[in-house]
Amino acid sequence: MTFNLPVSAEANELLARNPLALLIGMLLDQQVPLEKAFSSPYELVRRLGHEPSPAELAEFDPDALAAVFAEHPALHRFPRAMAARTQDLARLIVEEYDGDPAAVWTGAASGAELRARLARLPGFGGAKAQIFAALLGKQLGVRPPGWREAAGHFGAEGSHYSVADIVDAESLAAVRAYKKNLKAAARAATS
Image (cartoon, rainbow, N blue to C red; front, side):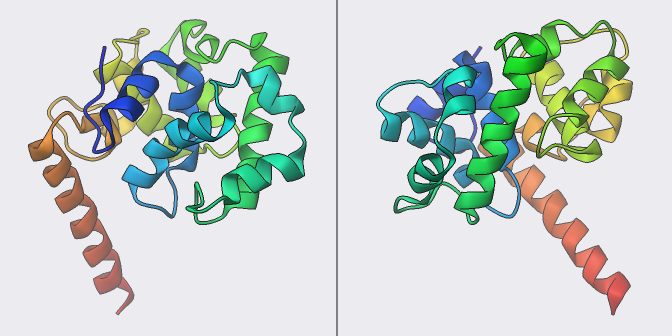
């Protein structure tokens, strides 16, 4: 499986191959462009000189990890907070999934269980859990019974609502148009 997100080929390859990188990318996908969020796991690997395990990130000195996130260009708009959240994510994976990030989804017997597992991850919530469940189902073939329902409208076939739907330039443009329309509607509602 490969991803065709609007990031470098190397970043896409890492996201497709490394479940921890994919989770970190999704974690960072807030208050920054998706290109930044999903390229940052590759940049983290580059800065560390290797692909870190969840155990390594869980045990990393918090100030040192924050410094890695803050190096120019910062991995996120809020590097210290996101370094801490990444570390919390790694700790949860170590404690609850024996250090195997893919076990978050491979162990889910149903879509509802998958969504619940994802929603418990640091930095995830209801909507992000649904988006990630849709991404897993649509792009990685992780489809426990009821996955589309658990993903909400993000799981709809043929939709263009989120990163789960981006497979090429056309689908990226459609997702961006959808988000732009949502923001415009929200602004109009508050006016």
